[in-house]
Image 1 (cartoon, rainbow, N blue to C red):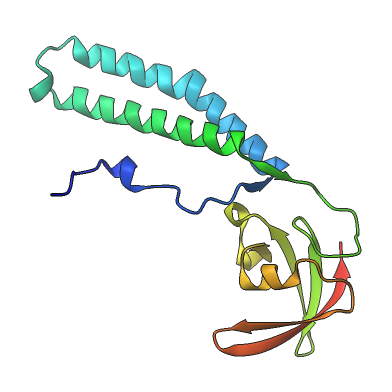
Image 2 (cartoon, rainbow, N blue to C red):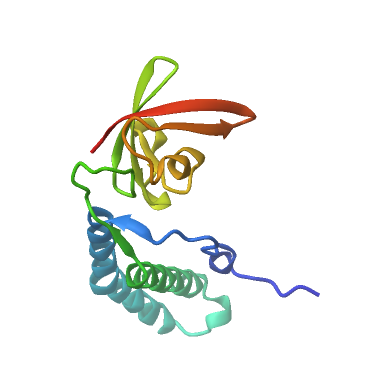
Length: 166
């Protein structure tokens, strides 16, 4: 027999990538501060107000307020854990080899593309930000200017030539 789980327990962090930029860490700290100083006290007061109405089993407003407070506390724990285990990606000066935080200009089939390689939490392929764990990011790491890198994506072998590293 399987024990039922709350929604919040189903959202496990799984394969969490701790690499984040200092900007993302600052955003997370601000959210954490807002939750601790503003959201949680409000939710606690709301729970206390609804508790005054008595009978908890039939008090839907109380149950909803408790659920909201649990959700806030869960988010606080997640943010604290992420910040405590964060590995801050340092902005790189133009370097000799591709590393996390590098902006890489590559050429493939006569076209140039620019990728910024960051942690998986901050990826945005539409903006050219890829994860160091992605097939392209993994293949580029450690290579130098003028290196040709062969990457297999969806059964196709693609050749990328590194033009510039910033």
